[in-house]
Amino acid sequence: MAQKRLRLIPPRVVRLVIIFAIIVAGITVIGIFVGYYKASTTQHNQADSHATSTSEATKRKDFAPAGTGSVKPVSDPAQLDAFIVGPGGDIKSENDVLNVHRRNAKDPFAVGAVDAPVVISEFSDFECPFCALYVNGARKQILSEYVDQGLVRLEWNDFPINGPNAVAAAKAGRAAAAQGKFHEFHDALYQASAGVKGHPENKTADFVRFAKEAGVPDLAKFEEQATNSTYDEVIEKAQGYGSSLGIDGVPAALVGTQFVSGAQPIEVFRQVIEAELVKAKAKTKSA
Image (spheres, helix red, strand yellow):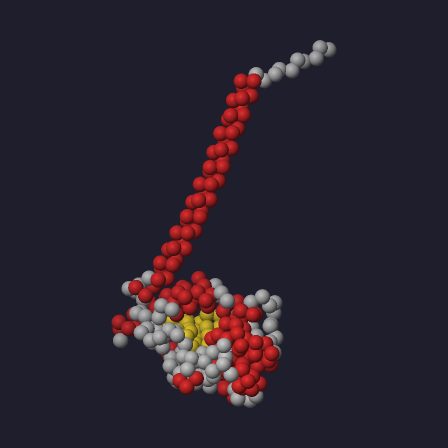
């Protein structure tokens, strides 16, 4: 049987194929870069849009106007009350829900204008890993987007439900508050908890370290108050207060008139906060 002769491809055709392949590859590379540029531009524009919406939040006509008071927490020990606890008024029915918010100028556990249109009352536990998730996530954005704009006030409530370590941490928080450093202590503790799986199980030495990071001036006094009975009664009252409102887990927050349970993402908080700002505006009009 005669063998078939191989048909060679003419050199001219080979050159055309190579040129075509190069053109296709070039178009592909250009497409990749164009796609990357568009995606980057879109993300950048979205970030700019969000930054603009944040800075323009106080100008939204459907929002209640921002408060006029200082957004900074009270830090002068002579002007604060480290024993503060409970609501801002009587709570006899659901109609009194806004009385949960203290709006007290002597409150060292609050940050934001006293007259901010919306108050978020937080119920939290220093031993709670989900509280750490909230503090290191959504709470930071609430501070920058709404608290710093005078639209929201945050008020911390002790609710140490995770055993003796939680109670000890609450006492340490009060001891830091007495020296005008609650928020710095709060942030130092929760930042240290960010990489911990489960409960951090902090002890006195840890509290002293956090107090030092927070800039508490008298560490000896801090340690004494954090470990003696100075704040035993008020923390018991705080825990009873949270339970009386039906709270059985942390973190929990009353955002204006709406209850938010758990370490929800910022999108959830934005939706509730902005609905409450609109509601506060309507209430102002009808008053």
